[in-house]
Image (cartoon, rainbow, N blue to C red; front, top):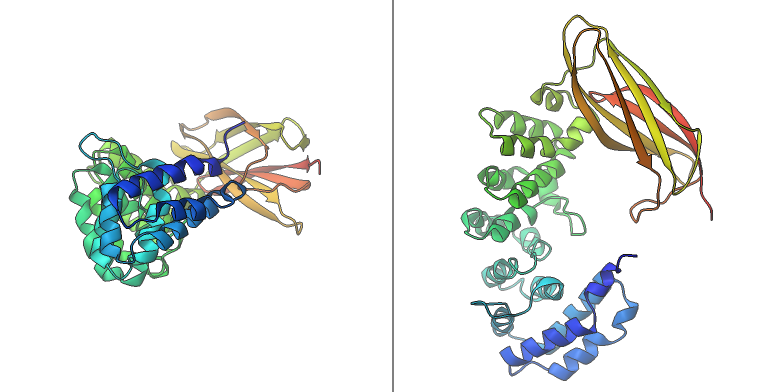
Length: 367
């Protein structure tokens, strides 16, 4: 069994933070920090642990934020020498967000210095929320930074709907201010950065589908394979939804002359088992057609209704009269992001975003 995420912040991390700060800041209250940060730590979940350590930093570092910021910067790895890195820096980024809001430029500079050692994407968001124009003017300058972690911070930290983080309502309503950042990074040499750009565009597509479809269309001409992959990943939600312009961007059209035969290997399944899907798609038109096949599992909810989750499957170009036959195994197993309920479920086949076939199954769940 995998180690619980919460164990990434353990008493040894608290001691490491204390030792580093003790060496960097004579005014730091070492013993009090360890007592506050470690009090009942192992009974807490990951984010609770981080916030408790953050609060201990607030209580024991100097009240002068510039003095505290200098001490924290001195704790980072430098010139080949070890320092604080990894998950030990999560509460540090949270500390900066909590205590540095009135020292705007200093705080963003510190978060920029932190991010190569542990992402500061959660920490910069309070600054964007407080003064979006000022924050984006600073963050936007990071797109040419030599360090790819800093460049990624510019795109990842400004995502309107970043998972696990506070949302940015102004950017959800109007994402135009971050488009220059995304444009600047669209051909970044690091895949790590480009995937962040794609994820940000996908976030935007949930609220502004036409804007993203137009953005993609405007960046397709002469696109390298890497950029094309980015644009496809950025369009994944729109493609699953069958958005017409998004489909057109990648050569897909509304399906015509498509006949689909779909079956499941069983009609009843227990949680933890797998279903096998079998699908045959025949093309009856006189011209070739490019098709994208996805499927949606309509999961039963507590109130008896169902909610679809779309999964990617395959793509193909069908010549006139041609048939493609595909098979897939889909596991129905416990995951942390979904609770399964017993009863009727449905699988729907989507061809270029439109329903083409479906089948039902019954799920049993041991309580």
